[in-house]
Amino acid sequence: MHSKTLPERLPIVAILEKRPSVSRWADAYWTATGVIVGERSEAPATLLHASNDIEQYIYPGLQAKLHLDECESYYHNLKSPYPSGYILATLATDGTPIPYYFTLSFDEANSYLQGSAQVYPVPLPAELYQWLEAYVLEHYAPEPRKKRRLTDIDDKGH
Image (tube, rainbow, N blue to C red; front, side, top):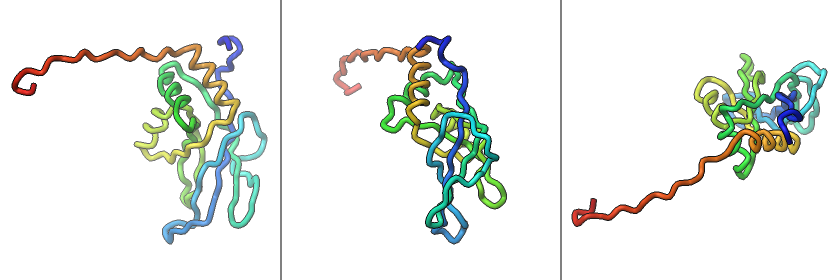
């Protein structure tokens, strides 16, 4: 894929799931179950599906955008056993997550995690994986590994 065919950003819809909590300290336990590439017109936190006390909500309005300075992190994400995207959210006073950002960079997600953001990893759908892969192939070349030279050990073990 050539850069002229790669979109600069993609619209993302997050899917978050609410389950009853097993902890007495919280009413619910939230996880992200996935993302959909594309625009949706529903308002944030629209109920998508409910079954057996488990509710799934959609949160449209996020974007995936790629940055040249994150290419190494994208590369390692693609090579990982479970390539992921990361939904960042703040928590409302009732504990409900409010997603506000989406990234494909583990390093960027980790830096937000060090702050006060909630970070929800999600598996990459094929469309996002292919888009990220095309971007990395176009803009990133991993550093070749350098062989270390063996040095002689002197009599003192140094």
